[in-house]
Image 1 (cartoon, rainbow, N blue to C red):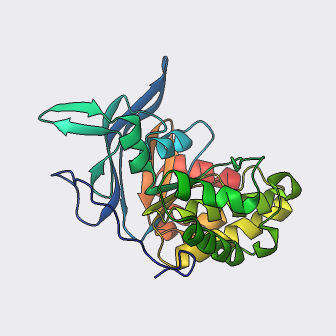
Image 2: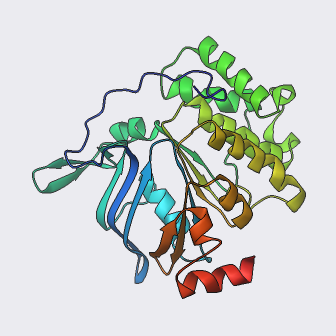
Length: 274
């Protein structure tokens, strides 16, 4: 049981897709996504297994963040399927037809997926503690006292117990991102998604955020992390995925993809960033 999460809530019942892969937390099958005439994802297939960390690396514009956003339906796919914990994301299937979920059902689905953005996305008019308590109480209907107690424990775990009554503007960027991680954890998600969580930080603040993510990785959290921190990806990831031009070029253990890549495109990218 993860100390950061303190306890594991019983997952709500959801309908597993009949073809879901056993042991997979995330499945992308033939995912395509375009913005106008720009094809951003070009037939992506990916499996992330429960309890594992997948790091996605690659040049800017390769489709990394768009891929991440399709996992919780922040971006609708044009073609293909996305499953999380065996459940079709964003749609229900009847025969060979897909029907988009209602906003309420989609919101319930997203509550099992924690998302940490590049730019924190904290509510400026709420205190740190209020930022953590808001969604579990008002979106999940949980008891305020229970959520407050969990939120305070999570703030302590990310080293910010003394900032519970501060406002985001009073915190450094690194502190705000640690609050954002704690906020995602208050939902007690089955899956955590990180979209370049250190890209908006000054270099001296990067380490404090990476340390929290490393702790989560060590505790067995299922995570997909889009990152430009190659050394960090090597350290925490069970699987490293290298993307270029909307496709997965190479994937495998970090020792293979980062230290001994087989594809020329991967070698070229790593030679410029390492």
